[in-house]
Amino acid sequence: MRLADYTTLGLGGPPRGFVRAESEEDLIEAVWAADGGGEPILILGGGSNLVVADRGFDGTVIQVATKGIDWDPGERLLTVAAGEDWDTVVAWTIAEGLSGLECLSGIPGLAGATPIQNVGAYGQEVAETVTTVRTYDRVTGQISIIPNGRCGFGYRTSVFKRDDARRHVVLSVTFQLAVQPNSAPVRYAELAAALGVALGDQVASTTVRSAVIELRRGKGMVIDAADPDTRSVGSFFVNPVLDGAALAAVETAARARCGEGARVPRFDAGDGLVKVPAAWLIERAGFGRGYTLGNGARISSKHTLALVNSGSATTAGLIALARQVRDGVRDAFGVSLAPEPVLVGVTL
Ligand SMILES: Cc1cc2nc3c(=O)[nH]c(=O)nc-3n(C[C@H](O)[C@H](O)[C@H](O)COP(=O)(O)OP(=O)(O)OC[C@H]3O[C@@H](n4cnc5c(N)ncnc54)[C@H](O)[C@@H]3O)c2cc1C
Image (cartoon, rainbow, N blue to C red; front, side, top):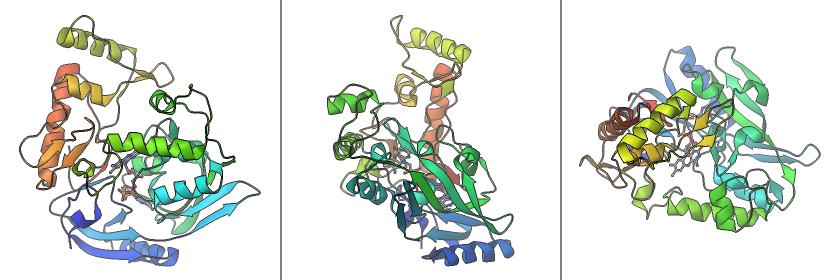
């Protein structure tokens, strides 16, 4: 077997071992047995945020396939097993008249992975609704219930992602949702424009879901076997968060490169910091949509931030492209782009 068959990029060599865990007991047992034998493990969800080396994974891959959705109307708490398909969960909440996840429609992968990088899109992120994450703690061998405040959520990160030792295996995630047919206030300008509403307005969650999925499709951000631009991990780089001095340096470089009128787009990131779209930097550094090194890896034709396996790529080729883009942006603007996906057996 090859992990290419389990990743949305369609890349990755063979693992030494592979276990599919359909119950929580099986999942814990598989992790416990591997840890006891000193066997490295890779927890696999939907494989939509993984870049796996061509030589594969020198250890056991444990695929999470647990199921279960539980709604507690009294506390407004939704508890979802790690192996549930994320978009199915979002659709279920909207059908049940629950709001809080609607902008996260169309994101691939499984529910258990959503706290790992604090999944977010169109003005919402799971950090806003997660109350607790229930995990198997590989250090203590116990089940641990981690409240939101201890998840260390940040922009596309959490304690789970920062921990290189991967201490916690997520078993289930609990979200607190609002009981209402309308969405949370729309906070993303592009979404508000697509809906024809003002920022802060609330509209039917079903309408928000349709609009989000349509916007995502236009960018190749909804998995579609018929659309080769979706053979990716979504955004390959996170948008850099800059302080005033770094932003000033980018502005100077942008004027020198693109003319005096060049204005660097930015979004407030709190604490005097701004988030600058990585796609803008990549394009201005000379890497447009469709750019390729001719090795089967290319930039998506729909979204500059997505690196795509056009069918014949290798992981090495994709990483070579990512390096060239990262180095080009650093040379042009002095900004070091960081990868968003989890790299397994490869580095940038
Ligand atoms: C087309 C496309 C669009 C995307 N759009 C977005 C977007 O809008 N916003 C966004 O935030 N992300 C986006 N992503 C990235 C990705 O979908 C999310 O990060 C998703 O949550 C990953 O889920 P997964 O189940 O596929 O995780 P995987 O890729 O299988 O794993 C990712 C990491 O999480 C770990 N992991 C997975 N499950 C568990 C578990 N139960 N316990 C412990 N660790 C676990 C893995 O070991 C790995 O380190 C997109 C990806 C694609 C391909």
